[in-house]
Length: 253
Ligand code: XBP
Ligand code: MG
Image (tube, rainbow, N blue to C red):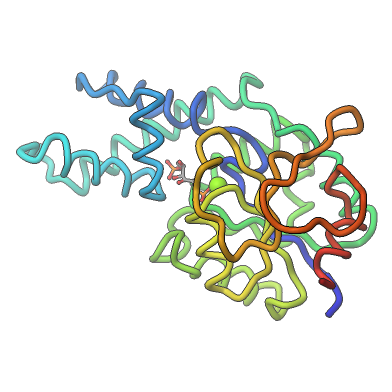
């Protein structure tokens, strides 16, 4: 099967957004709402098991503040809190505080120059993706991606396969012509559920997760001076960087 398209996750894959981005923004939103809730780095690791910001806040309220009943109703309270969090997150991203992971820009530019189609399948909100791409890759980079599927566009978030199925449908491609690039178990389950071969590049939050079913698990994309380490699976060839040739070879295997 030819490799026609790459479908990228955003949080943890294109950029390390969680610890110093989303987590910080949730905490700012809590403070602004007059809440004494604080998600520490360690606590946030466990909260990440629940994908999606609104879903994560709801889960936290159920476990840590079960009696919490805002007068506006829980759904609307969470929606307001999350809107405020999205504001803080996009503001933070626009300062340039959250760079792309090393090797990401190189891979995106190479894939584009070699005619690979590209899309995004993410749980986070569309505004967040726009802010990140715009800040890190400049004007026009949104157009590099044929489809940007984000947030509430599907009813069931990762680990459900819906977001990847949505992207495949919009691109008019069968799963075996594409590869997903992910960083987490939830992402892997989602991509595999849609029938996609999946390359994992871990980060500090996902390193110890169960990645059975991934085509390959790496610690990073690799740069000329810092190649990737293989954490599971067999890489195709000797390259220490994820390149288009590398992905094509992995896809064939
Ligand atoms: C990422 C997420 C997101 C972010 C927050 O998952 O779970 O929820 O943490 O985003 P994935 P929002 O990388 O698997 O897509 O607050 O905008 O929902
Ligand atoms: Mg991710």
